[in-house]
Figure 1 (cartoon, rainbow, N blue to C red):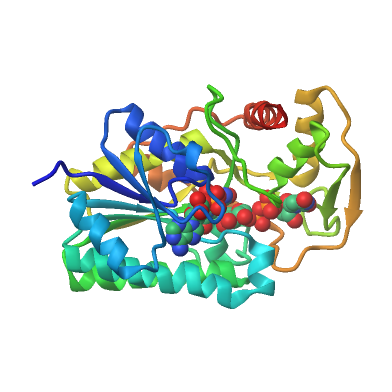
Figure 2: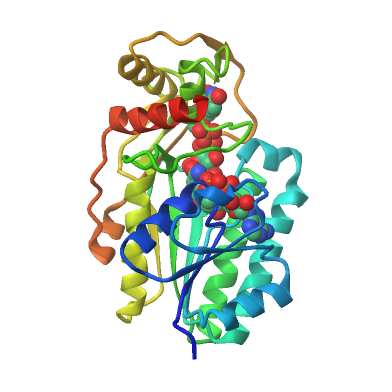
Length: 327
Ligand SMILES: NC(=O)c1ccc[n+]([C@@H]2O[C@H](COP(=O)([O-])OP(=O)(O)OC[C@H]3O[C@@H](n4cnc5c(N)ncnc54)[C@H](O)[C@@H]3O)[C@@H](O)[C@H]2O)c1
Ligand SMILES: O=c1ccn([C@@H]2O[C@H](COP(=O)(O)OP(=O)(O)O[C@H]3O[C@H](CO)[C@@H](O)[C@H](O)[C@H]3O)[C@@H](O)[C@H]2O)c(=O)[nH]1
C-alpha cells in the first residue's frame, strides 16, 4: 500500500496554500485537490496538485484511494459574504452539496480524521459581539448558513461512524507568509485588509468604508483579524490532535480582540507611510456589526499559541505580498 497522505481540498487557495506549505515544510506528505476556480497552481508548495472538483465523486474516491488518505483538511469553498447574498444557490451548491459529496466519499473510503474550515459567520449577530463556541448559531447570510449545514453533516456523520473531526471556525484571516513565498492573490478581492493593501500600492484608487453607523466605538465594523500563519499552525496541531486520538471538537480561531475598519485603515497608513483615499458608504448587506472570538478553547485543546497577534505585522505582510504581486 502507498504512503498515507493528507488530502487538502482547496489547497491552491489563500489559506489552504499556507497550510500546505507548513505541512510539507514539516515533512508531511500531502495531496491537494483544487479546481482552481479561485486558487493558483503555483501557490501549491511541496505537494502534488490534482486539478478537479470536490463535487466529482469518482475523482474524489480515486484520490482518496490512490493516496491512501486517512486525514482530510477541507478548505474548498466559495467564501465571499456579499456574493452569497446575491447568489445563494451557488454557495449552497459548492459549500454544502459538494461537502456532502466529499463526506460521502470519505465515509466510503474509511477516512478517520476530518478538519473543516468553518467560519465566524455561523454566529450571525452575537448578543455581546464576543462568540464562544457555544454561542447561538444564527447566520445572517447564505455563506454562513452553507457552512453551518456542513458542520451539522459532519457532527451527524461523527455520531454514525468512527470518523472524528475538528471544526475550526475562523474569524477574519489576513496577512501572508512572513517569508514572502505565498500570499493572498485572489482576483477582485473584497476582504478589507487585502483591498486596503491594494489601495496602498496603487492597484485601486480608494477604499470604501461600508457603514459608519454601527453600534461600535467608532461606528465602523469590528472584526478579529488573525494572521494566516497562526491559523495554519492551528491546522497542524489539529492534525496531530486527531492522530493522537482526540475527540471531535469545534474551536474558534481568533485572537480574542477586534479592530474597527478605521483602525485597520490607520494601521495601513502607519505601516505604509501613506494616507490612502477613503470613501464612506452605506452598510454592506449581510454584515454583522462586530465579530470577536472567545478563543481559549483552541489554546487549551490544541496547545495552540499564536505568534503574530499584532495588527501592524498582519498589515505589513499583506503589503509586502501586494508589492510583490504588483511586480
Ligand atoms: N478568508 C477568510 O477570512 C475566511 C474566514 C473564515 C473561513 N474561511 C474558509 O476558509 C476556506 C479557504 O478560504 P480562502 O480564503 O483560502 O479562499 P480561496 O478562495 O482562496 O480558497 C478556496 C480554494 O478552494 C478551491 N475550490 C473552491 N471550490 C472548489 C471545489 N468545489 N472543488 C475543488 N476546489 C474548489 C478554489 O479554487 C480555491 O483554491 C474556505 O472554506 C472559507 O470558507 C475563510
Ligand atoms: O472594502 C471593504 C471591505 C470590507 N469592509 C468592512 O470590513 C469588515 C470586514 O469585512 P471583510 O474583510 O469583507 O470580511 P467579512 O465580511 O467579515 O468576512 C470574512 O470573514 C468571515 C469570518 O468573520 C469569513 O467567514 C468570510 O469568509 C470572510 O470573507 C466589515 O465590517 C466590512 O463591512 C469595508 O468597509 N470595506
